[in-house]
Amino acid sequence: MSGPGRVWAPPGRPPGPLLGGFSLSEDARGGAVVRLEVPTPVYAWVQFAAFSWRIDTAVVVAATADAVLVEWVWVGQRQEARVWRAAVKHRAPAPAGAGVPSSSTPVDGVGGVSVR
Image (cartoon, rainbow, N blue to C red; front, side, top):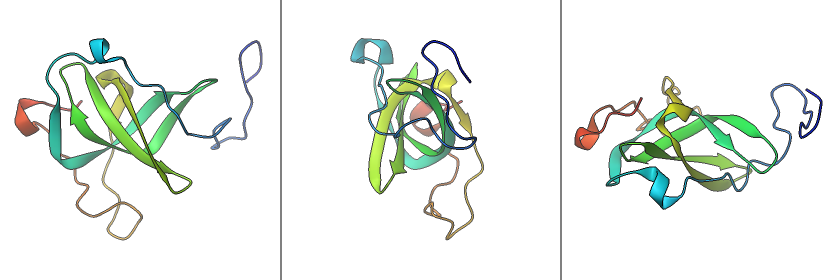
């Protein structure tokens, strides 16, 4: 990866710290927020200052008609960002004891909201 505005990083590593992901503005989120009873494991593409990165350990904890609130842990710190629904894809829950709480099972349709 090279060229204007591009930052090279070794494969599998982000080109910078995964702190401070950009969130959608309140106007862009759309509608009432529904908090999920059980976090849904997802792959989430999050925009940072100099790059976009797929977070493989993210979970959706809340949703609106247009956006979701994703959380992840990076270097021991909980991070969060509000992203478009199209920026997340379901992933299988990790086996118990693999770093993700066993209660993190996919949930679809909680409160009439489907996470896609």
